[in-house]
Amino acid sequence: MTVAIFLGSLLAVMALGVPIAYSLLLCGVALMWHLDLFDAQILAQNVINGADSFPLLAVPFFMLAGEIMNVGGLSRRIVDLALALVGHFRGGLGYVAIVAACLLAALSGSAVADTAALAALILPMMVNAGHDKARAGGLIASAGIIAPVIPPSIGFVIFGVAANVSINKLFLAGIVPGLLMGVSIAVAWWWVAKRENVTPPKRANRKHVLASLRSSGWALFLPVIVIVGMKMGVFTPTEAAVVAAVYALFVATVVYREMKLSQIYEVFVSAAKTTSIVMFLVAAAMVSSWLITVADIPSQMIKLLEPFMGNQTLLLLAIMVLVMAVGTAMDMTPTILIMTPVLMPVVRAAGIDPVYFGVLFIINNAIGLITPPVGTVLNVVAGVGKMRMDDVTRGVLPFMVAEFAVMFLMVFFPWLVTVPARWLAN
Image 1 (cartoon, rainbow, N blue to C red):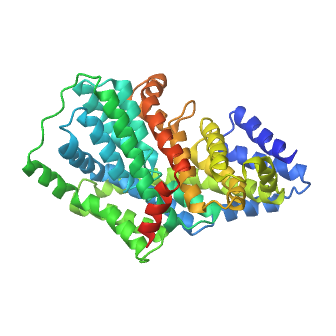
Image 2: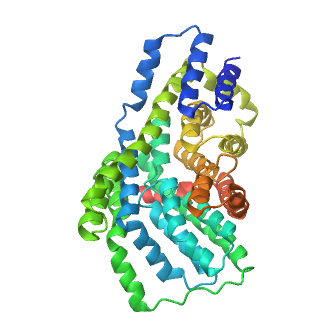
Image 3: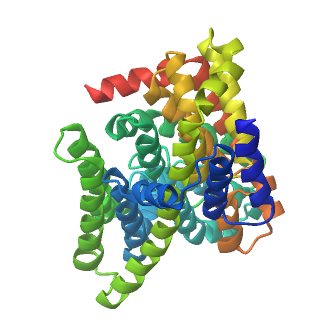
């Protein structure tokens, strides 16, 4: 009955068009009434505690770093480098989008920011070269969702806080799976591009490649600082986010000089607006999270999934299918915040490595960003590229299938995640 009230109240208010954050609060109130625990003071206290977290401070600083990189020319230089390296291959502009997405993912960790930058810079080039606009938009959308998997990842920060799992370990464990996602959509693009009669750009000479590499060197050094610094224990993920934002600001204003001092205020305001949405979601979800624990919903979930508890692979398959279904109707952040406190006790009871599960969970949620009808990243591409949502959805299908295939391979072969994570952590 408690599960039915939790899901029913949440889905009912969402169906009425109530924003997710307020839906979570109303769902919490409904559960409080059902459990005869309603107290406005408890509600307010949980909301405040939800946002009062040192690790979550990484979110605004990584978002700020992403905004600065787009305005300050770091993103553009990454795209120029990718164009010089792989642009001359058949379907080369598609590979440019994939390589640039992987590099940008290591800079900001925001799927929306990276996709917006890629769509603005690469989509017109692909359309002018003769590529199908819907397919090009679908490729860019599927490449943009690599950002929540390759560190620094905002998704991993939120999951790590909600699940009480080491964010450092999650960051290191996400590197290889994120690159495998890039490989999967590269294979899918090769299959699609060979059916298109498009002349690729001329191969860049060595001088041009070196010039692009030198120009993007400052931008490429950012992920090195973040990953090496965390691996060596120099700073925490939150401190790494601050370093990333300050470094990006220095490069954009002093080295590249593409960001004027008059633009700093606008960039900070834009990052603050995006951060406020995420942090309000986190704060509202804390009410539901507390009530989920009080109502003992995790033990009820364990009983429901008991038939699968003896086989970790079957259990993970069941959970991944469930998350896929939720991802079609809900954005990434609320999905993490709502499902993590419910699923983690099940995962721990089954003896599954929480870091391994976290990687699979975030990959699934990232792919949810390109699954209709919600598909936040699909909406970004449609908006920037001035396309219909239906066209972008059609274009993304082969790449979405490729990324789901990689995710399920990791379910059947856990060593694809655990072995590289263990090697990188040592």
